[in-house]
Length: 549
Image (cartoon, rainbow, N blue to C red; front, side, top):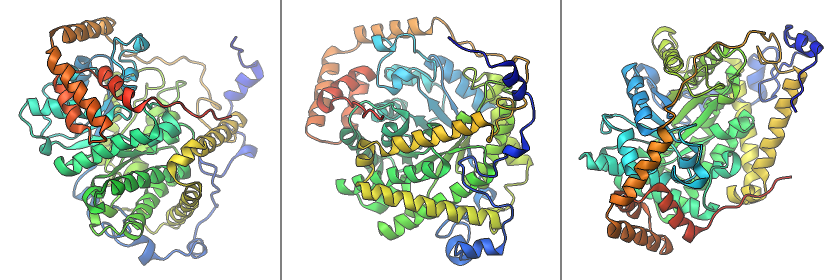
């Protein structure tokens, strides 16, 4: 039974914030001083030459490129996917027609878990949070008329990432586009799944093996591809603070580096193609400080801990998405303002690519109207605001430099804690990450309930008018057609070739070989995503999560 708030409480939600409850801290709860000055920098031991430097120079606090957006704007990469491959393909082409400069594919829940649309456990979930891709023909339809050799593509997929990537490669090669020409990013960050998002399939060790397979394959055969995008976004969405998001993400990145080195790869052979993915929440200066601290910490780790000599190995290149968890179903038009503030922080923080959320995402999948506004938000920042005219225009700000250095110090402290536990996987197995995120999320919700943290239109200044927002309608017959398509595929494919490809894949897994060649062969033989995942599950088993009390 749902209880309605009392009349007094409803009235309180329509009143302005209480000045006596004002919380002068960041969204994450870190204290903010009323004034920052030279003494603030002296207190933290700030050294401009050591900590700041020039843009494009170590330690890259001011950005990885000397000219930043004067030389090239960030990639405007709107995350998109819903329903069938055909419906999502239409959205891609719509976005490209309106000035998007890179693709970003969202997959539906069954696909994220490595299941086909006709799997009994997938029933009713077709296309609801992304596009359904169960086979190579789905990928071909998804990318129809998209110039794969000329545009970069990001794919937000983790557990079955290597399989989906194999489908992308096979699609391009069927068109005559060599794999070495393909550019883009595979999210492929399985460690954060055990920490925050929970879309895993196999246990941590074989999952890590698959990630390293993709790193090795990209290093040897696909020099323009980022084979892993180490992702703090979902960690933040689960309730972590900005500091925890950054620390946990860097810790995951170090785990991938260590695993690749154990495989025998040279640090400067693969590190330049590692990329990152961050959330950008509402606290403008905290987020900018987070991005600047991130580059500085990663550069120090790569140069000093790992001895990387290629300057590109020191770069932290990252994609940013505005904070989905900050969007509200109440007064959704306010989300345009939130997204604009967050996007501006990402740009001033030096992001390499950016997704801006649509105003209706707390209600439904984004409509064409809403996603165009989201894209236009980036374009107005890029072409009208003037913030791209100067590189790192906030450098030297007492507040920004103090917050950047304080963020860095807190992150180093957490990294040391994780090292003391034994690394990322032991920290996952003991529940360290999950406990910290849970505690931070609880503290934030308490602050919202007490209205010491304010969300306009939700816990103060709430309107009584219901939102009048057009809702995207998907084709209701899409799931049935997808099931029919899979049945036809299974009926018409070469059964002997299909069986041989799956047997070869299983043999490669048992022999601990790099699976990418066998995966490409399997998808070319029209093995489905679910069939491939199930064959690997036979070898690797399935992950059962630790219960955190």
